[in-house]
Image: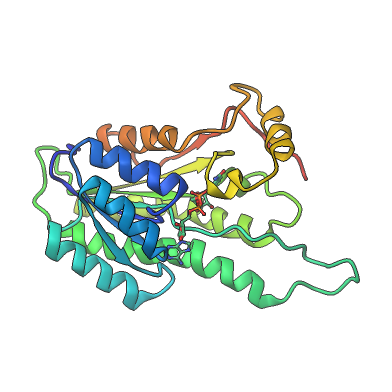
Length: 254
Ligand SMILES: NC(=O)c1ccc[n+]([C@@H]2O[C@H](COP(=O)([O-])OP(=O)(O)OC[C@H]3O[C@@H](n4cnc5c(N)ncnc54)[C@H](O)[C@@H]3O)[C@@H](O)[C@H]2O)c1
C-alpha cells in the first residue's frame, strides 16, 4: 500500500512506540491523526508533523467512533490504522498475604489492551471498507501491538499476558474476516523498547534488561518499531501475521 496522502490513524501516538509510528508515517507523506488520552503531548507532536490530535479513550466505543469520524472529516477515510495505545500495570495473582488480586485490576487491563484493540479494529475496518480499492484490491491495513508477553508472560503479568495473547489470537481471525473488504491485519509483538515507560527506570535496571537480550544487546528504539510498521504497510502479501521484534529475547519467569 502507498503512503502518500493516505489518511492514517495512530492510537497511543503521543508517546513511545506510537510516537515512533506517527513520525515514520508522517515522514512518508501520510496525513496522520493521533488518538490519545495525553492531550498536551498529542497536540505538540501533531503540530510538529502537521497532523491532527484527537482526544480519545480506546476503551470507549463512543470515543473511538467520534475520533475516527473527526479524523475522516479532516483527512478522509482511514487507510492505515495502527493501535499502539496500551497499559502495562503489574500485579501478582496472590499478594504477599495470600489475598487474591482484585478482579477489577484484571478487567481494567483487558478493557484497554484487548477490548480497546478490537474497538479500534472494528471502527477502522468500517472506515476502510468505504475506500476505493487499489489495483491489488486493497483498501487498508490495520496493525495492532501485542508483546512477547503473549508468549512468555512473566510473574505479575497475568492480565497483561492475557490481553496481549488475545490480540495475537485476533490477528489471523480478523485478517480472514476482513479479506473480503481488502483489509489486511498484522500485529507487532515488541520485546523491550526504549519508551518513556522504560526511560523512567533506573539505569541499572535498563542495563540488566539489556543484558538479557541476545543481539543486539540494547533496547529497541521507537523508530525501529516504525520501520516494521512501514514494512507491514508496504508489503502487500504480509497479512494475518504476528511479527516478534525482540532481539531474539525469550523472557524468563521474572
Ligand atoms: N515499550 C516496550 O518495551 C513494549 C514492549 C512490548 C509491548 N509494548 C506495547 O506497546 C504499546 C505502546 O507502549 P509504549 O511503551 O509506547 O507505552 P507509552 O506509555 O510510552 O505510550 C502509550 C500511549 O498510550 C496512551 N494511552 C494509554 N491508554 C489509553 C487509552 N485508553 N486510550 C488512548 N490512549 C491511551 C498513553 O497516553 C500513551 O501516550 C503498548 O500496547 C505496550 O503494551 C511496549
